[in-house]
Length: 365
Image: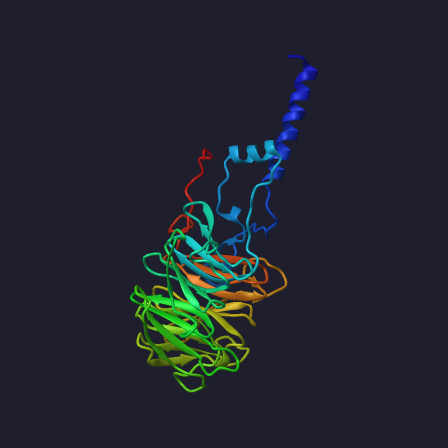
């Protein structure tokens, strides 16, 4: 081989390599060079920022062959992304996120390294999915505020059944599942008095009872938004119009309240999303604060994470909407404005531990 030909081959190979890399890029995301911990030093860290989910490419692993096919055919890699996420629920490493604009549920399967959507086909088509929860068996319950019912799917997105209807639900905004009971939060709207918890049988969808009404006394609700069940079977409800969290037992009897309106830690300005962990701690998103606060089961503040910001970097929020905590203690926070889900790992958990981890790459798919 002559020297000029060798040079030509090297230049051609370099150009192909550059084009190859360019065709596989995704829209720019904030880059993190050093671990971000909460609380920051000198305090002992309790949580570590782990990743952000926005695009299908955040979990899908594309092989060299996939990238080469894209380059050779001149077609761009098909990347899907969140437009207006709202609710989030996690089951064994699968992150289910409702998107109200795209009328679907995005599924980021972290250990499976794949991405898919739920609710785009009939039966089981969604109109405006908002609240979401998963059962211990992996069934996915999606609250459709426009259709006034709950769609239920299996873990792979296959439609199973529908719970509720427009006669029982006026403005359903959240769903929480605890064994054989499914709780639907119906806030009725500004002019309605039906601010209540509607309880269904999880398996059959039979209406069991409706509890609470609009008001400010204990056990009453004013514009409730979201709910989460606790390990003891009780349910916590974000009573947003009363700037508090209310706890009810499994039958709907009021147990305790905590929180008040204000700008200090432990108070609320615009509480919205809620979750619980395996130890009974309660996590509450506050849209006005741009953070989430962590309380123990007595309603005492433990710490808060995040702040309101015009930058979409980790732990910075403009319109945080929902939160979930998985089986391993990882926290998942949805922000509507920045169209993202931030993931935080307990400092006591290794990054390779738990369900939400990815196997080492072999690049031979």
